[in-house]
Amino acid sequence: MKCEDESPKPHFVLVPFMAQGHTIPMIDMAHLLAKQGAMVTFITTPANTTRIESTIDKARELNLPIHFVPLKLDCAKVGLPEGCENVDKVIGKEQVKSLTDAYSMLHKPLVSYLQAQSNLPSSIISDLCQPWTGDVARELGIPRFMFNGFCAFSSLCRYIIHQEKVFKNVADDNELIILPGFPHCIEISKARSPGNFNSPGFEQFSEKILEEERRADGVVTNSFYELEPLYHEAYQKKIGKKVWSLGPMFLHNTEMSAIAIRGDKATVDQKHCLQWLESMKPGSVLYVSFGSMARTVFSQLKEIALGLEASKRPFLWVIKSDDKVSDTEKLLSEGFEERIRDRGFIIRGWSQQAMILSHPSLGGFMTHCGWNSTIEAVSNGVPMITWPHCAEQFLNEKLIVDILRIGVPVGVQNITSRTMEAHEISIVKRDHIEKAVLKLMGEDKDAKERRMRATELKQKARQAIDGGSSYSNIQQLIEYVTTRK
Ligand code: UDP
Image (spheres, rainbow, N blue to C red):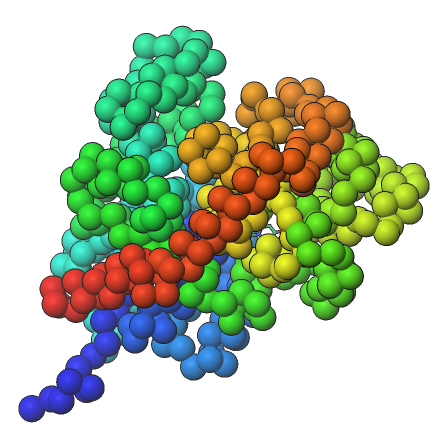
């Protein structure tokens, strides 16, 4: 008879969507599951593997049972250039569509690979944007959990929008619509709501996402129950299945976050950045960064630079400009870097965000409100200046500012996307930026209360993973999968 220790480990297959904001939380999830004794197969592609090499090395060094499996993506077949395997490498909607087509062609290779393993998989956790994995799970006779990178608040909004087709007969993209069936009155416009691939050409893909969401065995999120209990309950009720909130997942992964790279290789030597942070007063630094995808146009960069300068507050600014590198360099070299030398630190490219946000010198975060950035700030007790760009970020702003009351809006009304031309973008002026910085980093009653609430949420976040709701969800998820097996 087999003793218990010899029974095969529950085996999770993780299939992220290949965009850094989707892949990073899945990497954290892989570590989390592996540390709880599960075996993890992490599906990737050759070009994406090179971008997470140090993560892979670290997992190996820690002896974690995570197998990173690169499956070859047939870019040529869908008309994409070779190596164009990540959303941040594609240009325009057509190419995004081709990329999703190329991913769905991984069905057969994935099934063959998994069937050949000695420890057969017990479940698939795959991104909402990889709906073809539902068919893979059914073919293998295992459950599929959908990873939804949104928080419950935005997930609920998104679900209602698409389920109820609330914008179907709305001609004006800016018209405010009350969401039916939301726990309280909430108004949103089509322009500022998550697209869910609802533009022409994506109809089938979008329908498949919704269908697979309905068929999924459960939903996994990178939020935690205590952050948004009302919306967690309502979302769960609406979709009629369990929502396993496992977040903040990066906190389970602190060794990794602190040492290794989540996403791309950092542009600035981490030591140098740390030294600078060490030299600043506790709680004094504003971190400015808009995630992995957004590229800021030159005219906006200029306003940010001058707004930050006028605020006279220390800042750490991550610049991901559009392709006019020389303009940006000109702006920075025109005396700006010299003028802010004592209190400004600039990273051109990729930062070690999780490390930066956890530093005691941090006092605020000017963010595009991507969910990972938001949960990383919440977990570190850092209040935010909200500057949503697109997707569900305007909804996250509502959560941060109106519900959690840990944010100050910069006041942006319109979306900014990678595909927009400079002249189409509404530029936020320097005085709005300066005002928001002074408000967030100030010492008045509102600023102090905001900070207090952020600190309370940090404690709740840590309790959630330290034996609390997220911890027990992980245990239950592993047990559910093990017993089904
Ligand atoms: N990130 C980082 N360094 C950067 C930019 C982003 O480490 O220079 C990480 C950040 O910590 C977060 C993720 O990339 O984990 C971005 O995800 P988010 O949901 O905030 O935004 P997205 O990039 O999807 O718009």
